Length: 362
Ligand SMILES: NC(=O)c1ccc[n+]([C@@H]2O[C@H](COP(=O)([O-])OP(=O)(O)OC[C@H]3O[C@@H](n4cnc5c(N)ncnc54)[C@H](O)[C@@H]3O)[C@@H](O)[C@H]2O)c1
Ligand SMILES: O=C(O)C(=O)C[C@]1(C(=O)O)C=C[C@@H](O)C=C1
Image (cartoon, rainbow, N blue to C red; front, top):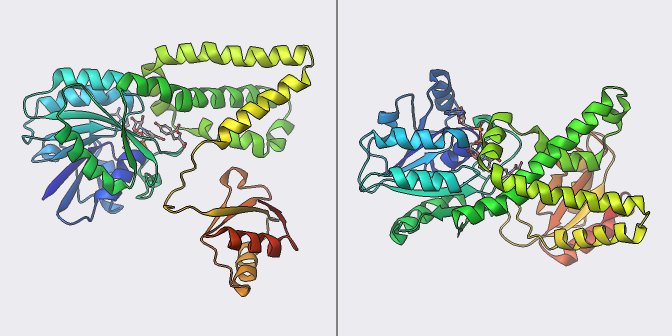
């Protein structure tokens, strides 16, 4: 029997619980200090057992996942060290920063207990167990930051458990993790929030700003809706890295200020070319898709039955559709559908067929 205790069963902890629950010989215990949350976890069937009692949660646990906000992680590790833990128990966390918790947990560990920092590079702007999904981690990277001296056998044991998430596990140094994730996750959250607040200010005097905000604004600002307390903790924890990144960001913005001041159109185009080429090289990892797919994008009018019409058109021509997705950032404007096919030939046939009625982008 493998017992897994999860503290903080929200978006990330709840998604982990759903990956483990129901697997043969696994028991998943969720902990919350709030009795109402415990009831909710049981009602939603996310865990096998839910409790407000920390000692009960960790009693005999083989793995303990700390999925609470970054600012509470160290306190949790210290509290766990006061409790009887099973010999060989692995404590891990999912916090979005890794240097401070990896150092502090390693310093407080007791004999026979291991700490291995973790961070799944998947999530969303939503929060709470209501947003949890067993598919959240599929094909995502899941970073582990074992401190020096952690036996590789223990890292392997955690890696083996995490294979149930279908994520790709990678090991990175804790400080290197914070530098990189600061740039690709924390800085973008600051930029999104600052941009929304800039426009929010203009909108106070003219609500047309809000009404005209379309795909571009929505694409870049989705993450501005993220949970404030989660992000307060992340940004404060990684402040040194972020202060340096914001200096570099100011330089990037100053470059644009200069290009505009001197009306350097070619310079501006070059910035777009450089960014576009780099962005194109980013690996695409879509949830639940393990083999490569061939996509086309279709502009569709926003009226009922449109998806049915498209799938019927394809079905009548025996073109196999593997996946269909409404591009979320345009959810309430006439939208774009992404249609995925298993072969280029099918994607080409679909494109030819649908272009007679719709605007198709390949
Ligand atoms: N949201 C993301 O995209 C994302 C991605 C990867 C990692 N993370 C990390 O995962 C952790 C959890 O984030 P989440 O997005 O699941 O948030 P969430 O709000 O969905 O879940 C947090 C859980 O912790 C509980 N909690 C909140 N404050 C607490 C406190 N002070 N003490 C104890 N419990 C508390 C909440 O009740 C909830 O169950 C954070 O450390 C975050 O940095 C988040
Ligand atoms: O997709 C999102 O909404 C996220 O914010 C996920 C995201 C990210 O920035 O990529 C956010 C925080 C994490 O710690 C890891 C992933």
